[in-house]
Amino acid sequence: MIVGIGIDVVYVSRLAHWLDNPGLLERFFHPREIEAARARRSGALFSLAARFAAKEAFGKALGTGLRGIVLKDILVENNHNGKPHILVFGSAQRALEECGANRIHLSLTHERDNAIAMVILEKIEKDGSANHASIC
Image 1: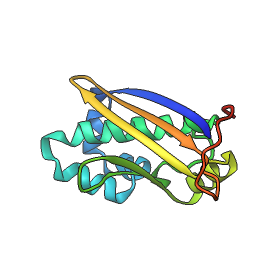
Image 2 (image 1 turned 135 degrees about the vertical axis):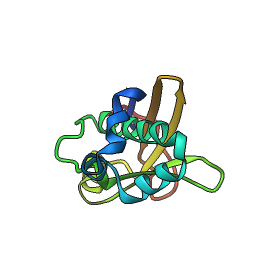
Image 3 (image 1 turned 30 degrees about the vertical axis):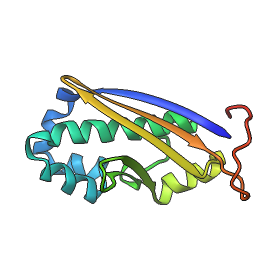
């Protein structure tokens, strides 16, 4: 069952000054996200913008926004094939549990000036089924 859907777009250049401000990076991003972005060198800004959009889309999918969530409790990374996924900890994990979802789907893209993220929150029943019902 789909519990929530969220989408967000970030104007990439809006975050340009963040690269020179470690305090901002540490406030909004998990240490693994910062490390991965810096490893991308010239693509660091796109990486961070897409991840910030994912965090915002996650809050929208929850239906509550990011109120009460520490942003670095949301970790966006890529698997060995490059597919992005979200891991949640602490405040973000609690918000996910309160919403009733137990699976997060994520899609990211960036082109020129914009980074876009879409998040779908799903509740999978213990028997593995996903009942078709309404969005909370």
